[in-house]
Image (spheres, rainbow, N blue to C red):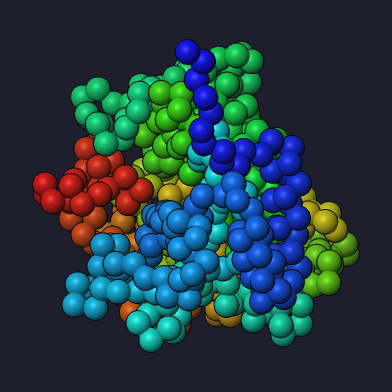
Length: 477
């Protein structure tokens, strides 16, 4: 008997998805009226009968991505009364005050590829509120959004960001949760950079990933295997920091979901194997106003304006305090090894890849600072808020500082935690309570891992890695 199709949920072609998501993204970048956008999206949801659920996404203080699916009809009725159990999120509310509110950030509305997320679903990012409806201090996305809006309202300034997120593709699903030190990870390919054939598993994964990324409105530029075996990187254009941080979270989500559908694991562990290059997330930052790049000065030798140079000096001056924000896991300190092009030197350079900040050969459009010391498991909202506010508001040690060798970044998480939790600058930027919560979580992770890492990847640095751990694993310690 021929089967009858009963379900009738929305499935949109990748071409249509790209058009819809680019239009939505453009409104967000232009700071279109949020109330007007909310009214448009609510009407769209009410009228579109093929949508069954709305996924509301948010991130915890460590940067772990969380998603809640709300039935569309319920969401339309109760959109101003959404709550969730904050005590179930590490670093959020305690059990005695567990309820937190969730409001919808309607400009972040996105349409989803049905072959990855399922038919009939759309996504929007959420903003976390306390019981009284006030912004929740540990919601770093909310803090970044508020700061981006503040500088826009002041003089139409925009904090632009482009990232280069590297990752690894491993054999098997759940490769991180099932990690065994004596076996290590099994790579899907031993080829690197230009040595992967067009239809190898790594290239097929990258192709599918690029297609989904394009459909989500990322505005792709290039994609390729990276230097290490089974390593990948997909690049896309720069944009406002809030959108850029959202895209980092979606980038990782897409990578993991597509890899799982192929029987693999996409991992953003910074250094899954010793003696090869690790994964970084080079973070390119610049400031613009009314479409003009404020980082460019054609009369300067390197094309970098005085604003750009002062931003570099402030970042270098606060490098130690920022290190835990840029390198948030035990494993990330393995990557800061100068033998593998690791950027652990606190200085700026146009050519030296071991420098924390690279000053590219700048043009009017591309003038920027490239912060190379960032690992791909950093909380993107915390990272961008801390980098930009430090670069603009931190202590400027003077013009000559950019030329000096200021030493090295901490080579272990314990030293980085100590500098971070004593930082008054980061207490002001992140909120003192959030700074202390974050430091406490990182101490708990470090205590579950060997202090002397040695030359073999240990179980603890993988299993208690903040992007992998769950209640079951932590309860076994």
